[in-house]
Image (tube, rainbow, N blue to C red; front, side, top):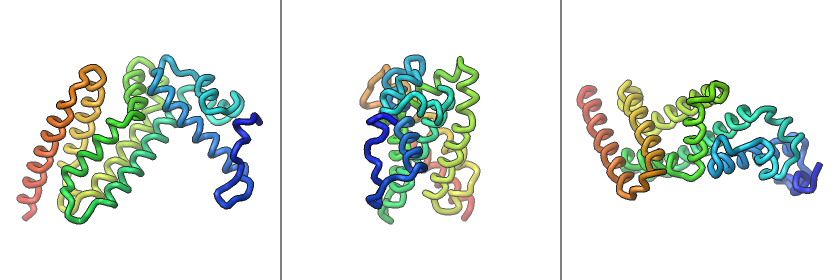
Length: 217
């Protein structure tokens, strides 16, 4: 094991890390390095050798965890999504009782896409269009993201909003519109565009919620 890989073997309790803890730490370093490389260099410019060097782990350790580039990036996207969804859940839980849930929810979703690490996800979504193997690797990850995101948005809203089928449509519109906005900002760099889109989504959400509540009363 190299110097970089063996550094910091102490566990949270002050003792030496177990093999499982060291393995999990190495895996997380590889995933973080993959996301950074993808955001900076794109899919075509990211190699497994580059990721291993950035993570400070041996090539053998990298291959042990992720034998292919597709497996590595699919796991990295899942890693990113789980992290951001956990942050979303904590942010929702921390909202004051008198919060404007519509504004807060849309703003939190926009933060999901506007964060610099989201560039890695956008890069892979575009690359998957012409790379069948990458597309196949990302498909279950995308399904997982959609499922977790649906759970988070349902938890944010009271009944009857949370169980109405129109919430799914509204969520998909919001998700896709903000994802598209994130892509367009790469070349447009228009500081007013996000404000206009977020205002539109807030109005759309409120109108939809009013309609649902009227029908249920």
